[in-house]
Length: 260
Image (tube, rainbow, N blue to C red; front, side, top):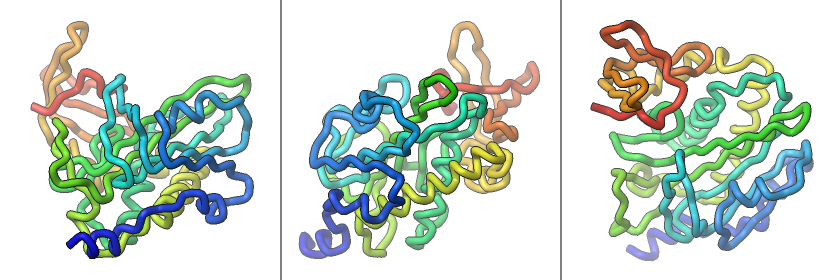
């Protein structure tokens, strides 16, 4: 069994990643690092796209200062820093990154993936991947850092509060983490170019096909805005819409949103 696992899920040597990417992308590869998003954030600002990838992240983080748990050599853990003009509306950008991931995994024969607004990838009600976006204004530019964690080959005894799944449990297709990482980065950047020109509207129909929350009952627990209702999907800016007794409510953050 051990031999099969190693054969199907090849340990990545990320030092070669740069040779699979465009020459104008700066790549930083590590065996272990505290946090890939934080590493890119501390670099001096430049307009060049930058990628940080690691086999282990010791202080992973998710939305709203939650921890992102992983084990060494069991996940794809990477961040991309990409620059947008300061006047580019970024609403829906994390959704676009999720759609890029889904499209790449479909090339590996993985179907029935769903995206939980705004940043999680699910398979059969279990979390497969998460996306974290952080941005800052730099003069005439917005510097956006997109962090991605994708479960590939976890120890099955791994303990986590959130129900999880990995690629090993989903597909028999051989997975090479280096090749998959390259494909993910290139697809995300391709979709970002489309987003830069056309906004989320270009991806609106694609999102509707994989919307995990569509039709589900949710509650919003912020004391200043306490309500429950039914998810109607997103609008053409990527904002979640919830139908309540008091009308349709737009949701811009998932911090206080919970499934009923």
